[in-house]
Length: 207
Image 1 (cartoon, one colour):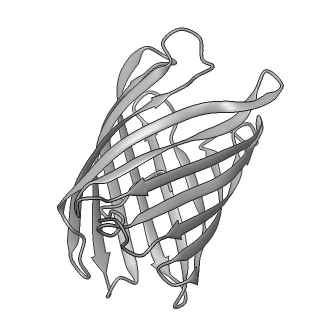
Image 2 (cartoon, one colour):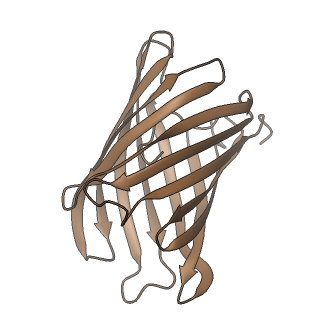
Image 3 (cartoon, helix red, strand yellow):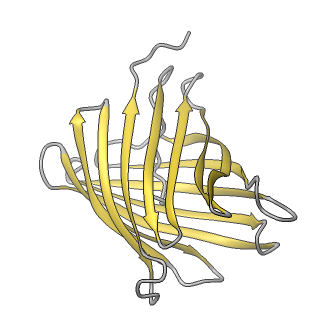
């Protein structure tokens, strides 16, 4: 999901979130490894490869830091803050975005429903403008290991996008898969996409 939650990877542990996104311009391949070396500081460094001038090349390199101001608890709420940068190696001119946002999450019905909201800011390289960003999403448990996920997100200068799908734990708290469909509102087939994701989480192993 684009809308982030008020959670981070477990203390002294790491994770890899990866996904393939198929859209009108071809396939994008993402991998976002993250670790929490201190207990309340998640560091992420990853990126994407996709079609550029008829070749598959690195299109995005992203670095992010995230911490929690209040950890999310069952039937309660959580709050965090995150900031980062995205470099676009093959873009012309200024090729780096800067962003920051506040993720908030609220748990209902013993975690059977969790709602997430984001408010943030971005300095976008492609337009040379600064704008507010936002996201609103939820996770609803359908079965012990399966969740319905949905969200809408965007910024103040273009139509919002939406995405929905299913998330399933193959191995609880270790291996997760998801499949989603998304589009920009009012765009028909022009910007729709399908994604397939894989998330791997480690036990604590860092010193």
